[in-house]
Amino acid sequence: MLSGLLASSGGSRAWAQATSPSPPAGQGLHSLFVASGKLFFGTATDTNNINDVPYQAIATNQSEFGMIVPENSQKWEVVQPTLRQFVYNNSDVVASRAKANRQLFRCHTLTWHSQLPQFISTTSWTRATLTAAIQAHIANVVGHFKGQCYSWDVVNEALADNGTFRNDVFLQTLGTDYLGISFTAAAAADPDSKLYYNDFNLETIKAKADGAVAIVKILQSANVRIDGVGFQAHFNVGQTPNKTSLVATMERFTSLGLDVTLSELDIAHTKLPATPSALEQQSRDYVSAVDACLAVPKCLGITVWQFTDKYSWIPSTFPGKGDACLFTANYTKKPAYFAVSNLLVQAAAARVQAGGTSAPASASPTVATTSSPTSFTQGSGTAAASPLPTSGGHSLLEAITAKGLGSFLLPLVGVVFLAL
Ligand code: XIL
Image (cartoon, rainbow, N blue to C red):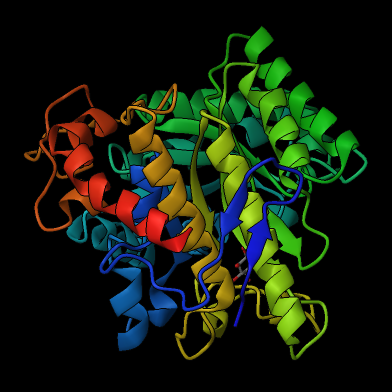
């Protein structure tokens, strides 16, 4: 069991770590994150775990996860496996689960070198034909989910680790023009969805972050809309960037007018089984990442890339590594879960003490009308049992405030004082 103080690495705050972790009853990570001024704490999920009852009990608990993203079922090879044939069976299931559970739906991903259908590599593309193929793909997929996606990862992993562009079929055929082609097509197909560039190692490799800044500037100078950058945040225990450095990297993008998120957070052990001290290090690493997002007003949310080791992609992709999630394969909460929860309890209470309800600078997703089949009738920890007020142009956080955020938060202050 963890004990003592967990210092948030690189930061000035020290967060009390309860010896017997006990987050306020019923308050999951999303509820606490919203109470801390953020938009969502979410998870990747998909249809492969649909019949796993204990899994679903957690995945559909909107207090725990207020947003879901399909781990695989919206990728190009799944939705357009053969040219011009679109298949939405699985992705529609994930979308309707989000709607049924009043969770935000984050959409992933459009132009990406990986998980492409075979016809992409077997076709001899010209500039005109590949442009048309990207445009048709994006128009169809984004159009299919129009109004349902809080955001789209429009371009994924366009960079090599040294910051140069990844030498894939898109670059070879179109140069960097495929960036603008993709974002322009996505904006046309769903003007209300936030459009993101998403990549890994931006957090740790400066040259790669430089490359992502260049991508943003290419788009902005062409007057093409980009709303945010997703930091995938696939980290290793003991090698996670500290809070100060993560904040500084995020601010490179927020200073360009963008939102940021931690879009695929997991923190893998490099030696298994994890020792008690490795579990403590994993807790500190999760706290660093979440605390960094708390410190950046335009870091709007965090998504973990699965919440249980049972379905984590890490062991099969990186043999020898694993146990990267907040819950064990048996759905037991790990020390890292409690460390994050305790951090958020304190962040929420600090927000109340500071006068309490200021929203992140740009957290203003549209909450659509309930009559729309594609509305964001998203719940939150403050109103888990009833839909939020829904009216066009209504900010989600305003809606939460209207539901009485202050009265929800006051008991948390007491919890924090007890913990201290
Ligand atoms: C991974 C999935 O988790 C795996 O199930 C799949 O086999 C491969 O892709 N970056 C991304 C995600 O943007 O889509 C990837 O997801 C992980 C890395």
